[in-house]
Image 1 (cartoon, helix red, strand yellow):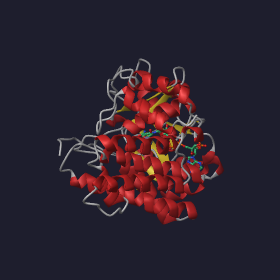
Image 2 (cartoon, rainbow, N blue to C red):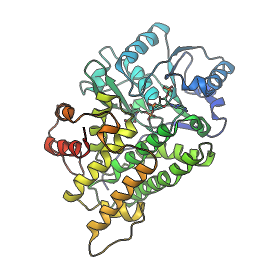
Image 3 (cartoon, protein in one colour):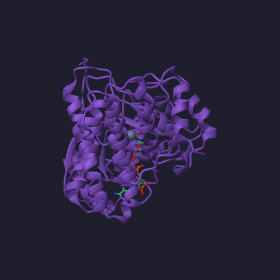
Image 4 (tube, protein in one colour):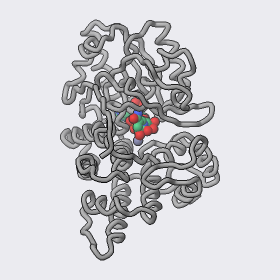
Amino acid sequence: MENFNFYAPTYFEFGKGAEAETGKLIKRFGGSKVLLHYGGGSIKKNGVYGKVIAALTSADIPFTELGGVCPNPRSGLVYEGIKLAKEEGIDFILAVGGGSVIDSAKAIAAGVRYDGDFLDFYQGRAQIEDALPIGTVLTIAAAGSEGSANSVITDEENKIKKGARSDLLRPRFSVMNPEFTCSLPPYQTAAGATDIFIHVCERYFSNTREVCITDRLCESVMKTILYETPRVLRDPDNYEARANIMWAGMVAHNNICGVGREQDWASHHIEHELSALYDVTHGAGLAVIAPAWMKYVLEKHPEKFVPFATEVWGVPLDTINPMETAMRGIERFEAFLKQIGMPSRFSEIGAKKADIPVMVDKIFAKKETEGFYVKLTPEDVTKIYESVADQ
Ligand code: NZQ
Ligand code: ZN
């Protein structure tokens, strides 16, 4: 195991009715004037908005609203939020929504306390040294931003989607009521589950040896997703399944599954170019890229694919031909993604073969290799894209 530090101070209020605590939690973490940040309107249709407003009102917390965050959140609204927060003297941001709303809130939080362009943090030109505190009311289990130190924003002018990372971005608290996720369309539920699963894969496929504690944690989260996702797709109001998936989303990405080990992240970076260019749902883009990445790197480095097949997918170990075992695991993963309605080819997500060189150039603009489990060159990434590019 490698040396590590791990600081994850988010307070979680989990379960039915948890949102009633929102006002008290804002006060507890020092908020007195709040920016209420949300997305395109789902919270107004499913009643979450009314419940949050009631919690803020009963705690006498003044707030200013900024809605309109879209999936794959954009820089334009972040600039607007920074300006608004400065004008209104905001001292706390409450994000009500999914990863996109939370990431936009994190960007505003860092931007308010910075004199330069907030995109400096996302383009590697500056480190975050201060940020407003944020809290979240989560409405979709997916990105894990409710417990993570990360934020991903699309620079809409240059169509570049990049992440920033700092413990200062970790939410002070996250309210997680699994009932709020019952209104998700099946496609969003499945895309979220896929994202959760791949967050674990990015950590599981590692060259670090003797990390059985995190290996076993990763396998548990993956098995939970493959058990609960079909259950919740059959029965969207199944509270227990929703609860397990929601907590899995947090555990998958606050890095408790990733400490002490090298991590990969190639699938995510390859996918981010798809969401930046075509506005693909992040989890759906991952469903196309991750199996393609697996099949490509399997030949070069099969080691971790054997326990992936046996421990996660229940494939019997073929001791004479372990490569066969590894391949069966990837096939079961692909079958699972198909079963839950996820895409597998460019044509299903509107991506174009002709854009592959542009995407590859963006990935390698500031680095020579991508990922760590197998260090990929631009030629490797081109082949991964091409293996799923049917148009
Ligand atoms: O905008 P509204 O109307 O709220 O609708 C959203 C949106 O259309 C809808 N939705 C959310 N909760 C709902 C609901 N619809 C009905 N009922 C509900 N309860 O779902 C759609 C997707 O929402 P979004 O926030 O985009 O989903 P997700 O949580 O998957 O976030 C995706 C973003 O997070 C980034 C992704 O790249 C992408 O931009 N990521 C952030 C990470 C992080 N900060 O740590 C890590 C991830 O790897 C990921 O990259
Ligand atoms: Zn992700």
